[in-house]
Length: 466
Image 1 (cartoon, rainbow, N blue to C red):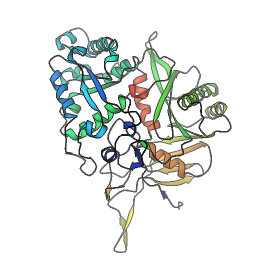
Image 2: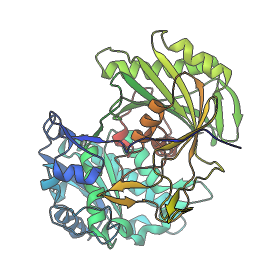
Image 3: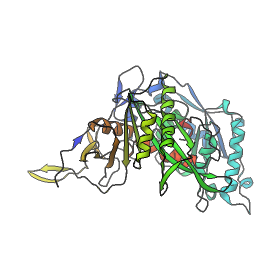
Image 4: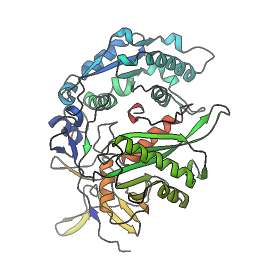
């Protein structure tokens, strides 16, 4: 079977330091060489940090904040990771642990009690401390919750599908508190302090309201919507029977604005854990999403609206989407499938003989395999610092399968947008993700929302869920 020639899109550039032409494909190098996008647009002078921590461990947090203002050389990912030269040097902001009396310490012996399951007693203790800290939230910007390994018995419970991290995020998000969970093993004792400082500083900067970078080369009149679902617990029946629709809205810069979430009343069908909406429910979801975009853009509508989800679009969902979107907006509905059986191998010419290359297919390669289907490699080789770089190290990357259920025209623009959106996850320091941020955040939202007993019908800022 012979395929048409494949195309390769150049690695998307990121924009730093508003009001300048500061661009780079490397997020960490861009931050160091320039400054964050919002450093002059909406400068942050100080990030005030409060804490919930085990009694006797406050000095550990003090040392961690001190590390944020020091230099650290990389000990891993040497072909990618940049030297960390301090949060003040890179992000133009200071991180400060506020007065100890404003934070809350917890005594271990008062948490774990005989006859009570560890995850219940620990979550109740932390929840009570969060409620107390919510009364003081004008005094700080970010609430840090430090979890030592000595508390690990309460981190998870598989029988009740409990996860402490998700519980904390749901509890703080309901109170509009930006939070940072610190695990002893991953934040305090991890060997590469350079890696920890990059990840922590980016997270703190975003949660405090900063924008580290934006996408450079997407049509400014384009908007993106990522649709995901969560099944929440009904407190009356103790069964997971609330199907919640989540719609994340992104502008052309790849900046996550906010997202809407509400419990759907009309589910047309369900395949496993994936629901499919009725025409009316899809219309409601898309209308809410468009309204959210307009509210953030002074009433202006996009000329192009691209919707991503991982499952196919039913006829009812397609009709409902078109019901909600005015005819002068170009609507595209794309299914993005992560698990495929396709592989692609790059061949090189060695002394006149074709042989497999030492590096995988270039990231950004795409190949059309049907009238409305393409394969797009969001993992692969990148020319970084004039050298080949493959983030995943060793394997043969599989492409994403993209199916179009509405829209027309060439694939280059869609592939460019998806590739760019794989670089917009501000919750780590990597060059890219496999999935675009429209779907990459979906898992975080779904796992957090299902812990929220009461869902208020209002827009949510994603920084509270990071």
